Image 1 (cartoon, rainbow over the protein chains, first blue to last red):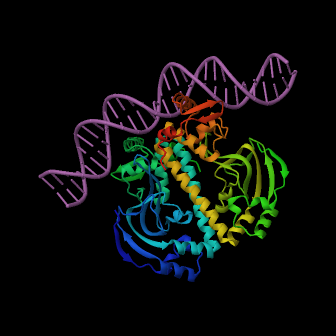
Image 2: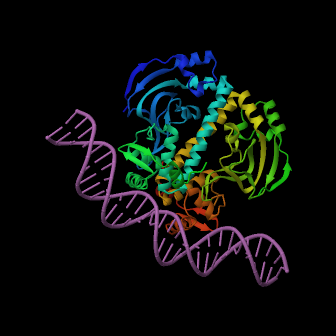
Image 3: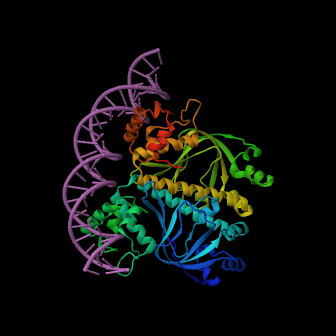
Length: 235
Length: 235
DNA sequence: CGTGGGCTTGACCCTTTTCAAGGTTGGTGG
DNA sequence: CCACCAACCTTGAAAAGGGTCAAGCCCACG
């Protein structure tokens, strides 16, 4: 379901707002801007599919995507979300492997496609950029390992509390303490690594314990310290 | 428990046997050789600890280490093993964070310490090396994500079968089809992400089903296709 | 107005964990 | 050389935690 919307223009200067491009020279930036193409994508669009070959990377201007793997029985495991300023798909470009995840738009997005050669050119020509990209990857690896340990050792209840806090860090709360992200119960389950029904039951429990308030997909965090305690989240 | 053994010498030329150093020039290699120091470490030695600051990386000449995270209740989760030719600890050096894992020797090892500056010098001076290191990290990230999905979705039984196959790939079988790695039941449990007792019970079941043979810590793989089937391992 | 997707709840069952107890092994010191 | 200790391995029984199945509800959308 690839719903590529209309082509859009992004000014080269606007690229500099993305951390990853901070260290580029004006020329380098101009080159990136020249070789890239930007498009709008509707919710539900799949940007790339697990197992497909990717020849370039996407930088996210606006919107939100979920990055997930599909288990052998077809169940999704959401690895992370990507949003404004995140670069996705470069892992496969660099390691020269097929995509090991699927990237799907969950909030209408504006994405810029950057060809693989542009990216590898930057890496080879600009050590600072190479270092930054490596830092990014290393951080991601650290996250992934932490998440792995949590899934292996924590109960579903703990993980759900932790995921709510994670969502808070990633998408922030609005002035009423509502998480600024709208996910189906199934998506939530696919982050936590459990069944949809379990998420529903536990959310009800959390509500009964006055930790959260629920309005459809909108979730309000009422008692963050308690969530931290239930999730055994430290540091 | 740091049991640093005697200092040893490694010839610069010998470094080239490690894939990661393949692309270095003679000078670069000489510089690495000059700034590094090599030591023997006994089984049980902890090379670095989760949460500690690391100022350099280690390349493994011989021996085996387990790389693990400690969950909040003290239980280990083994992330991966490292052996001949593997570079460990560079993640933290590069991302400039505290170590997010512990590295512990499980088979007497010869390790060479490479200062962080040497490593970052190479990255900045040699784009090929930067690219290789990035490939390595990206592959590792791919592995980690796959493992995450498995732990989240597969049963303990499936995971144990899969881990046995993983150990086969990593450490190979001897002429009698025995895994060439000796792990405690607890270590096995800490890879699979389960309780020690569960591993013991399932190993017995696998033996009863003629998939493996057990002699203390030595495990012989009798029916690999069946292990693949039980583990739902595809590709 | 009907339909489908998503949400919710209840009941049941199975996998896995936990707790307890006993057995085995290898290494150390007397 | 033997005795002892600690670490590790094994098994059983009970309990919990979660998954699965089934059914009904709600709401948005064509």
